[in-house]
Image 1 (cartoon, rainbow, N blue to C red):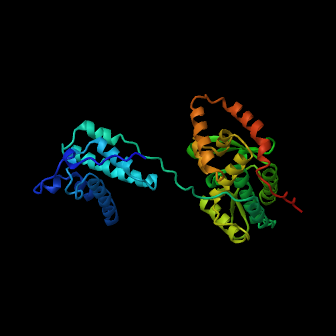
Image 2: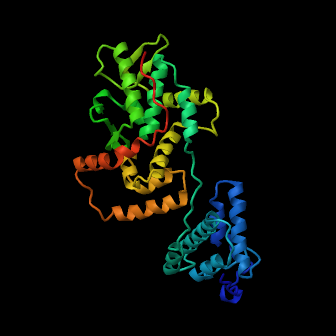
Image 3: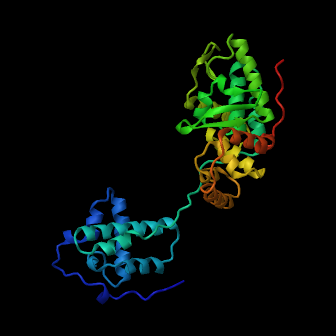
Length: 358
C-alpha cells in the first residue's frame, strides 16, 4: 500500500495563538453537530487529520492552507476497516472545506475539488431472509384446517410465497383482476404500475379452493376484493379490503403456531423467498424483476438471499444492459414472461398438494 511521507507543517501553514477561533472552519463544523456523541466522534477524526500533518490538533491547524492533495494523501495513508469509516472522515473534511470556502479562506477551485472526492460504496448487510423448503412445509402444515379464516389465510400465504406479492398488493387485489383461464392476475403495484403474475400449480389450486369458499359465503363471487375481512361472527365482508397490518398479524400468528422455524419471519420475507427460489432455478434476473414489479433490476438483486455478492454483480450488469434495450410492447412482455417463466414457477413451490374440499 502506498505510504506517503506526511506533508510538513511548513507546507500546510501554522495558526497563530491569537487567531479568532470563530474563524476556524473545523470548530464551526463541530458547532453544527446535534449530539455530544457526534461532536466527540468528529472532533477525534479532525484531530487525527491535523496530527497527521504535524499539528497538535484541529485548533492548531491552519485550515486555510488545506488543499485537495492533503485530503487524498491522508485518506490513502490510512488502513480503513470499513467503507463507512472512510466516508465518515471524508464527509467531515468536506464540511470543513465548505466552511473554509464560505469564510474565504480557500478558493472555489480547492473547495470544489475536495467536494468532488468520491465516497466508497457501502454494502449494507441485507435485512430479512429467505425461508427453506422445510420451513415452507412446516408453515403450510399449520394451515391445514378448512375453516373460513384458515382457508383465506392459506391462500394469502401461497400467493405471497408463490408469486412474490407485497402486503398491499394482496389487500387490494380484486376478483376482476384474476383470470383462472390464464392462470394469472393483473397486479397494481407501487406507483400504480401494472404487471402480470402467473400462478404455479399449488397457488392456482389453493386460490380456487378459496374462491369456492367465497361462493359459499357470498352470492356474488365476481364482486369485491379477493380477500375480504372476516368478523367475529365469521361473516365475510368482500367490500372491505384487508389492511397491510392485518396481513402482518396473519403471518405472525402463523409463525407462532409453527414449529421448526429457523428464525423470525415477516411477510416481506415471503417475497424475498420467491425471488431467491426463482434465481436458484436459473430464471433470468430481468424476468424476476418483471414478476416482482421492480423499477430497477438492481433492487431485485438486493432481495436475493443466496450467493448475494455474485447476484448483486449480475444485477448491476443487467441494469447496464437494460438501459440499452428498448422495452417491447405490453402484450409481448406478457407472452415472453409466460413462455420463459411459467414452467419454472412450478418449481418455486416445493410443497405437497393441497387436499380438495370435502
